Length: 420
Image (tube, rainbow, N blue to C red):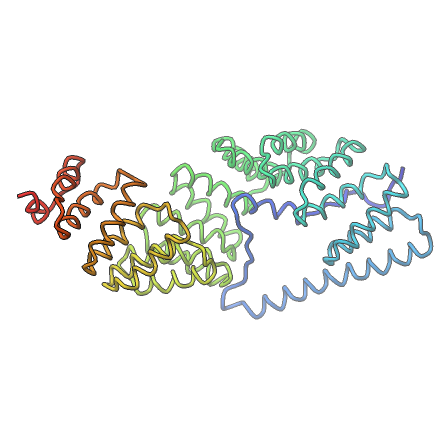
């Protein structure tokens, strides 16, 4: 069995830790900087990245020389595999770990490192198999438990993930990241208080863990505790001022409290940090629309559609904005597109019916009101509007008007005239 004596800390793939932090909330973020420091920080980042790459290029040469001198040097194959992985040469990394294991099948590190490569490539089942083998050799390795938990969670197997995070914490109870990861697993199972407890533990260990603040904020938001969420996102921003995610999520919390201008400011900050981070365009458009700024809202919905052409809600809300501007023909196009993507949205059928009726096409309006009520019989105004459409087509619309009123819809005097 191969033993490495020159390392006191087991090699770790930190990237896997960070990927998991955002994986379960559906987004990976890339942060830039504000305008005042952008050029200088870009240079620092480029320098740091270049130094990082050069370090691993040097490692590659060093371990290649060692392998040429000793083709059975398992440590050199393992270390060169790490260098290949850091340089993005994943297949070569896997090949080196394979070579190390052919020489010494009981050497745990290549299993662990190969698992990290597999996980980074989205091959989570292969990663789990390698972490399991690594743990059969070294059962006290908290990182293997933690990363196997991450792989389980990536496959939606959150209960198994929690079991692994528990084992990791039994070995290393002071791991802020493992508490955070377990919190995410709890959150994905709807076990919100346990998630909050874990994020809080993570923060007691590392008060500058901005990701734990973000994730606790998300869970508070899920519970409707938006003020608590805002406090956590604000704390995350104070630690990492260039976190587009924190601004975006704080904006969402503000919007849930009807503080639409504050929401717009945060969405704008997120986009200023990373213009390619497109998630804020759609909710910012909603906030503008709710403030009656329909033309600006349409611009944001345009951007949301540009980045995500299959986002049915963006077409729906742009259609609503066009309706509010009196541009019903444009609204019809958007509602129709929204229904091509999602044909089960009763509200879109109703809204399109209203647009048709405004354009004096009551036959098409009636079809859409019928469809809306077929999907959702609880759209009360659809009964009233259908009654009007029927009346305009020479059909008795009074029963629909009376039904809408009996269900609690406020019928206008003009609608009541239909029944006279």
